Amino acid sequence: MKEYSEEQNISRTQKVSRLGRQQGLAKSFGEFVQNYQQANVDFNERNKQRLRRQYLIAKPDATDEEVEEAISSDQVGNVFSSMVMKSSRTAEAKSVLKEVEERHQDILNTEKAILELAGLFQEISDMIYRQQDSLDTIETAVEDANFHIEIAGQEIDQAIEIRKSTRKKAMILLLVLIIVMGIVGGIVYLEVSKK
Image (cartoon, rainbow, N blue to C red; front, side, top):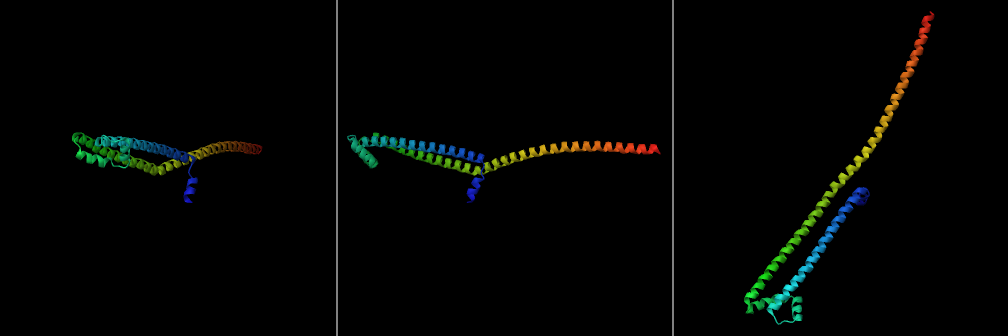
C-alpha cells in the first residue's frame, strides 16, 4: 500500500526518466542475451565439428551415422582416447589431443568471460538502482525550486504593485495636506489681518 502511494507521488519527469533507463537496460540485456545465445550456437557447432574430426581420426572408416551417434551419445572422447593409445598415428593423435586441450581451455576462458560479463551487467544494474534515489531527489529539488521561483515572481509583482499604490496614496495625502495647510494658513491670515 505504501509503495502504491509513493508511486502516485512520482512526477511525470521521474516516470519518463525511469522508463527511459528501464528501456535502455532492457535493450542492453536483450542484446546481451542474443549475443550469448549466438555465441552458444557457434560454440556448439564448432564443438560438433571438432568432435567429428576427432572421431574420424580415431576411426577413419566410420560412417556418418556412426559419427552422429557417437557425438550425440558423448562417446567421442572415450573412442578418441582409446584410439590414441592404440593408434600407430601417435604424432597426429597427440596433435589432435593438444588441440582438444587448447579448445577445452578456450571453453573455460569463454565461460569465465561470460560469467564476468554477467557480473558486470548485474553491478551496473545495481548501481543504476542505487542511483535512482539520488536522481529522484535531484528531480524533486529542481521541481520544488521551479515552483518556488514562480511563487517568488508572483510575490515580487505584488510587492511592486503595492509599492506603486503606496507611493501614489502618499503623494495624494501629501497634496491634500498641503491644500489643507494652505486653507488653514489662508484662514489664519485673514483672521489676523481683520484684527
